[in-house]
Image (tube, rainbow, N blue to C red; front, side, top):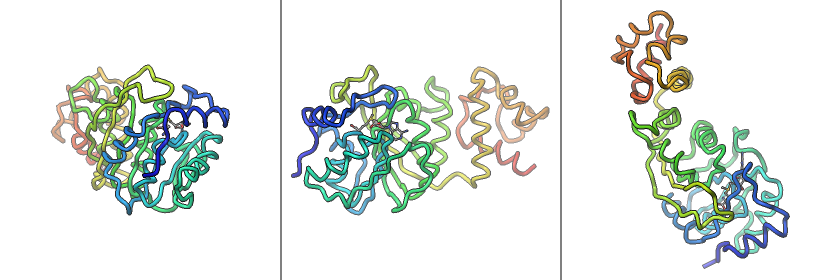
Length: 278
Ligand code: SAM
């Protein structure tokens, strides 16, 4: 089997190309090949898959993906890392034709040729939620995936209504996918060692809950409800729903004295549909 990247090689490459990991770009590199293979396995990547990776860094997970997938498309913001990645892949015996590196900010990428089918990424922590939501929105060809995020963010992504972790990412993500926890990852497998815990989140896409127009209305309701989390819905949504907020909520079967954290996506959807039909 072709060997993956280990701790010594990771430091060697970083030193050679002048990369000193920065917090700003969430640069904590995985130095343990077993963890990379575990992530790829947990994403159930198959030989016909085109894998999308956000933030490949020095290539730890990229090479593990190349062992299995037909092709890997990797979006990396750091020029030096993006430039070195095909070199590393080739040195490890992989065909660089099966790797496409896009040297850009993942939040700015709206189109990718080649229809990726699976997302597998150790996401940059500071932008993990917007990156994930952007990908679910922009790339419907992605059917499933596994992302590594800060444990606190993982809790939020899979949270149920009424819990402390439940927030706008929890509701929004369910527009596109079912999400669940796929385990934790030890801090010791990173270089540098982060001061937060990391966890894996698995998702499987389902049919979107409605049209793009309905999504925008629904998301504006979710944003308003969680922007003023402690307010009752009749107050938090009054700017959008107007003077008749309480009546409208009651009509669609939502108690106006509840807070946003008590509602499921389907509840927000009923409110949005009633606005759409006005
Ligand atoms: N996948 C590698 C690994 O597991 O070792 C690196 C993961 S590291 C947590 C995050 C990576 O995302 C870094 O390589 C960083 O340069 C890159 N990155 C940060 N912000 C980004 C953005 N907005 N778009 C694309 N890549 C980004």
